[in-house]
Amino acid sequence: MHLAYPAVLSALLFCTGLYGVLARRNAILVLMSVELMLNAVNLNLVAFDVWLSKAAEETLHSGQALTLFTITIAAAEIGIGLAIVLAVHRNRGTSDIDKLRDTAEGHETDGPDRDASTAAQAEKAEATA
Image (cartoon, rainbow, N blue to C red):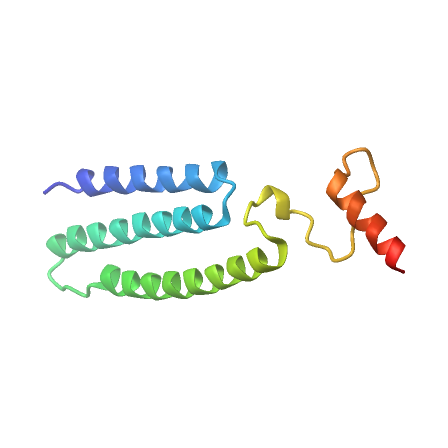
């Protein structure tokens, strides 16, 4: 098999993952897109390792060893990422990235873009105080 086939497949997977990272608003879909990008890198590492091992007399399999490290790091990343997303979803009620941009505690907007529910909550807090 030629090196071009896995390289093209890897490029397509990476571009799909990059599109998912840039276009999605849901944090879980962004994490899945990052995993897709890491799997494209793993495919490239293994393909080039096989290609280089055919050309060289010694087979070190360094690409496959790097792939194992990448899979380990990806597993840790997805575990920590999902824990953070679940904690944010429990506290904020959403995992939409656009709505989570302002993560500073106690920061409220006083401009015209302040929605009615935030204003109602502020009025209840003032009435009970």
